[in-house]
Length: 63
Image 1 (tube, rainbow, N blue to C red):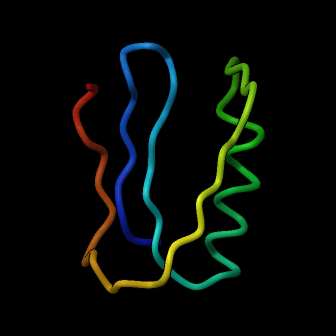
Image 2 (image 1 turned 90 degrees about the horizontal axis):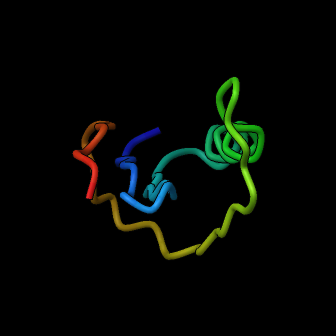
């Protein structure tokens, strides 16, 4: 999976993922559960056409 993820100051998390559909689906399943001790209230998914925009995955600075 390629793209990025970052925390927002209000506690939300924002991410963009590119990759094989099966891998994206696994990652989205994990996002719905969240890490240990997290309380996931909602996951909003916006599907966009594949753009081959990323060459790696990175964690960005909180904004």
